[in-house]
Length: 354
Image (cartoon, rainbow, N blue to C red; front, side, top):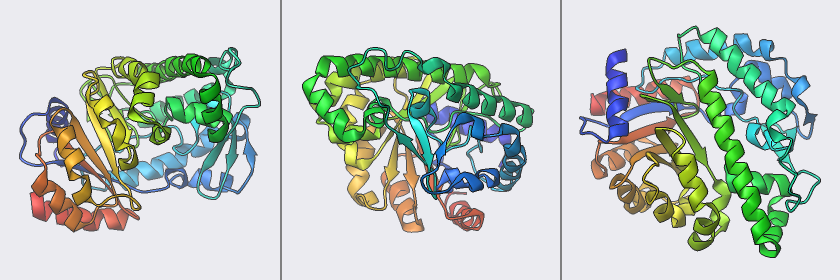
């Protein structure tokens, strides 16, 4: 697709301007397995440390991945990120890291969340240094050929749950709500710092930023965030704990997006009230509601924000969504099993939408 046309299409997406069709992109599940150099690390139950990763060993794998995605005709821009699947943010917050056969797990810290110094060392961890090493490698490798962006970085409640273990986190919240509120504020500030450091460390791509994992180009500094553990909270609890922090996150960049699962739709109103939040990304989960059942929530989002729908979407799903939703401010990220699957779906999209 024409490069200039793709930039124009995404500028319209963020501005929620009228357009002839939704924009499209593709992704492959299990991102930790996408880099050949990383496969030897994916063994069950092995504790890993920053020094275990030789960043230069990944150069060839990233180059291969770039050429594979460059051959896929799509609106989205494949974005190179520090090895997706590594729980970078939990590690920066002090968690240990262990591998499994498809990715990595964050291990709880052996300190109570009520300890006011639990995050004091986090910004200077060796994991932060390794994360920056990956960003620097990718910037050097890109040379302007492709964008570099942020990987998956877990959210505020996600990270507190990882630090303490989810069950212990909930008990601590019940017993010490003020202490947890203080830790949540500290985690949010750390996350904003990491996101700003990421944006400042990478070169702009044609004057803008690409959101890693989703591969969306924005015409200025941009970031996305999530909070999957929010599913455990009522709307009132989550708004009280995180509403102001989410507004702070959203106002830290001109373009922002929040990742949301249907199981957490109870927080949709809280997100829609944040005027600084530009877009909401909704997963079409295999074990979740059908696209038809999701439509009322998706339409509600479109009344206020740009919308990204991501998941394993078949031709019927895409046709249903495209007929039911406005094309303005709408993007589909279609998860496919492999590059052949992307090409097959691309042919359908070209035939259906031009």
